[in-house]
Length: 463
Image 1 (cartoon, rainbow, N blue to C red):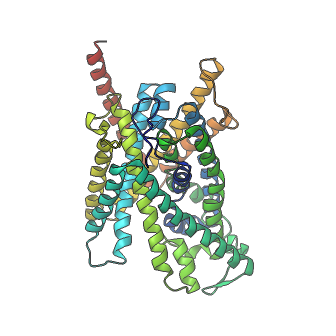
Image 2: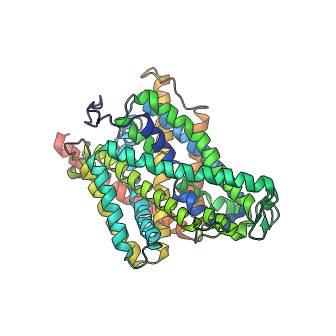
């Protein structure tokens, strides 16, 4: 039975998520299409050095999660970083971070919901892709609108499928590497890391250029923080979930990419299929294409599911402060912010149409722009933690015992790394450059939006 205890901060959310769901939401956020599908093209582009990109982004992600953990333990909130930015940086920061996060998920959803249609098309080639995309969106929207407990349960099983797939791959891959197995005419082993042009076959520069795509692969790890406002015993459950991120990153991401690079020479991979499918197909295992297609489909559905959930809560946090249309702040009798969920769903529907009409470049641009939202969210969390620490040093509040390790130095290093990722996007030859040059337009839109919100607020208060 769903709990009816509401959040102390008066946001009317139910405490319906237990330890089991929160742990899996955290795991699910750390495993997505960026790994299952995107790693193949990046391996072909950068070679074995992709491992370092995943490790560097993984370190940054770990410190972001620890910063989030300290903030959550200070004040569990479904408004998450919007609440923290508003409190520790300023009202404008809450507005900017909230809408940048929505932009991230709107763009991610455009990519993912289209990916769902493409994966289903493999099995149902006669059914138009837009129909399967809309059916998938309809199911996920219904799940999110019904109850948070149903969302948590669906995300739990999505995550179980992804985790089991990764574990099966890791165990199999280790056996193949240690035995020097023959995989489609090539020998698996550590030698594949250096035998085909060295560890940096395309140069250090190309390796650095993959950072943006890898950051996108790590997106959604922050959803567990948004779930804090609807979690039973959040101060007890959340630290365990966040602590687990570091080993999940090390094992699932860095470990998987490292083993992929050792199983086959890097030129064998490509962006047209999952690298996991590439490996098992060359082993001659029948039906693996269908199995991995189902797993990647699950990852895409999970991403859309998390996007609807998180943006619904973030938009309501903005609407409560008059920083978003009133409609997106509305809740139903089941304590679900249906206005925000429907608002994001409209963007997803637009994405289905957009990707149907435009070529593949539109998909790549969507993920590149989404990365800007990820960077903005991560930077907001880290800087909010730094400001909270400063407030604690002034005696204005008490820091929780669960803290950001190495603060403030690790915070500054993480912010510097995120700035580097954005700067490198400007030197890309692909969709990342388009996203980079869209930054001024995004800044102008946000500045105008904040000015309108401020004027409306001043008129209402008579200030």
